[in-house]
Image (tube, rainbow over all chains, first blue to last red; front, side, top):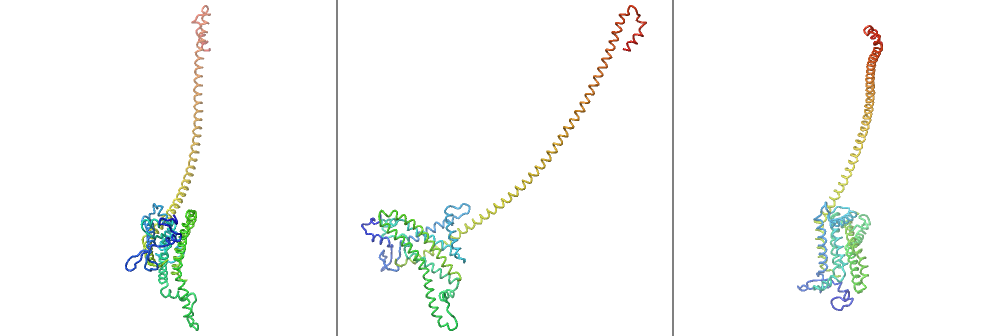
Length: 281
Length: 156
């Protein structure tokens, strides 16, 4: 398959560029435009949205079905599997997050399974779904949602909002502000050193703001970077033609590890950030 | 790589999925898991209790069997003693009976002997008289010597 795809002669560069192009739609001059949206901030990556929501629905369907049919007398294999996953998440959350929250554990479960499913799309051979899309008239198709920075950012922004929410909820607005300004260097509040306090507070504020903003940024960019690089290497391997087979296999096996690990890291860091937000130092 | 509205869409989708998971997935499964844990703990406790009562019942049964064995030994001993007694009694009875029958038989034999002797004596005296008669027919008058003859017969 590779470079000799079913749509005319094509250079490797074109092939790779085609694989990295999202199916985009945006509104220009009151008309919906497809794939002419470079740099347009109100464009939507239809393929990323479709696959992420589709995979989210699969998650909801599998786990919801297990939850609905949960029985103690005759637990099915699916229920047992779902319980293993939930137990794993639950113990991870309990190890890290010591407060009481009805949200953290389901949040962690959703993040882990959803990100895992989205990452898993990487293991589908890179040409299958895009070629299928071409057959039904879809010009571009990027099947791995987590290789779209919008997707990872979207999730980390939700986590960021939760971090702020939990900080304010557990420490109050004052606590949130003091966390941003009174650490790591405590400003002198009386005596002759008082004159230095504004500078120290400004310094603290810059430092703490960066560290706060770095949390969602690093969370999303870590996942995006790993998955994008993995996808790119799959595409590069696909360019090789017939020699891709052993390489593809080896990379796919290795990638199973990355897929799981990145989903786990995203989940674990979310829990850690939220437990930091709700605990006193 | 462009940042666009997909970001907002993904955030909304995530909020919806997390909400759904929090409402409809996590609680029932957690409940099922906890219920199972409780059931397993209860089951193990019940099994332990059953084992204990089984041990107790076994000990009781052993005790009862021991008692029964002891009782059986006592009964056996009694039976043996009784049997010996009965045999001894039987032996004594036998000896007594034998002695009695022996005595009866001895008496009968003696009686017979005496009668036979009497008879023999009569016959001998008759024969003696007859032979003496024959000898004396010619010389002795029976009447004259009758007293002598009867005296003779009595003496015999």
